Image (cartoon, rainbow, N blue to C red; front, side, top):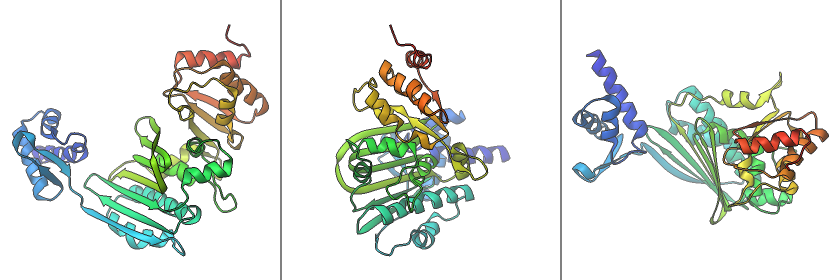
Length: 345
């Protein structure tokens, strides 16, 4: 009996965590996972429907299951005089309920940092917070009516394109108000959540947490202001401290390390071949002790690009350690030639 109860609990958890990916065939997927009949899985599905954890549409073979929203609300706040800790304490924290401490810590950091960005930087008049919680995950979206984060960074750093702002955000230590902000909020928050996205102006930026980091940058329809969405599994084992420890060092936990997704340099079919592209990639690297260049999605780089990054910059900035990950053999050959001071023949 205890074994059956344990398997039943595991099956329920599996259904809750996977139904969004398999809304039409969750019974088959779960039956295969637990090596039981679909009829046995349907008993768990019916129980979850009765408890209000799932909803269903259609009949028999065409039935589609989805997670039911347990708590949803949206509220508009005027930015003038708004305090992010008060919104957290009075509205968001109570809605989260009994989440584990590590989950609440991530939400506390991410929500208050993103709301503070809207208050201090957006130049808008209001922000709308949308809250949605299911049995599996919680999603919070903030939408302000300000100037737009990418446009503001573009103007502050004199960038040629709004899309260049995303690369600067991914590096970290970026702020348009250095007297009052460290530029760490978006960098760390984007790496704490299962999914983190920003939509502003004509740019859509998304970071998803898997075994490896997954970055998406693409054009979107033009929007006013900035939309930030954060989503996190309600029972993730991830902690805020794990994320901080990955990028900090020393007794003062200084933000000394960063991982830069080189693929964010590419737009469409652009190839990374020129020194000007390399210099844009290298901007502000001198603020870090260790920079990891992640070449996921980059199939090739040019000689001039490699030489600027792996020979010229290193000679001028020996205090900055640059290392590489996820580079294919062709990219590695070009890097090794640059490091050796040789050029392709």
